[in-house]
Image: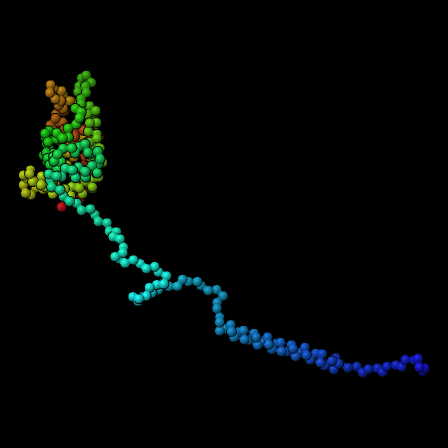
Length: 295
């Protein structure tokens, strides 16, 4: 062996990995143990806190019950505006207009005004003085089946009675019926309920006039009104031509039964069937309303 010959190295003794580097695995192991312990403690503590503060995932919403808050005289709600006292509130009560009954001699103007409010077309039939007495006198005549011309002069029409002839016979003209159209329409426009209310207001004045008729004490104002209504309702409705006989002075009915009718019924015949039916219908309404409110 010369000096340039490399000597052989001795063969090392084999060792196990654990014995080879004991510090290389010790530190990571310790860290893993500490980490697992820390995580376990953290989970345990989180579970304990969760038990103490448990809330359901879904809550049912409900409105709180309304409660009455009682306030002492010195307390007022912070968000409620101060309400005005009764003394500060304006008076809103609506009082019905008080009816003042006039004396009979001064009643024409208020009676006419009140009737025109019920039907404006009535105005032309309300021009006579002493309205209450004039109309109640006619009603009294009608209650006896009578028609006294002088008592009805204020209701006189502007056109005369009309008849027509076909060369062989006279008959009542249908133009004669039209004379009464405006009068009947004015009455038909009246509201029966409102008319009876007006009647009740002025009943003391009507009773004052009624007392002048000198009826027995048991006879009442409503008795002559109902009797007059009954007379007008009993008038026949003739839809066929009404034949007349003509004398030198006036016309008469050829039919003896029609000629024998009461003056009130003959008056209704002159109005024609349509006007008669309309007027009778309104009379029934008024009488029924009067029966419902009679004292």
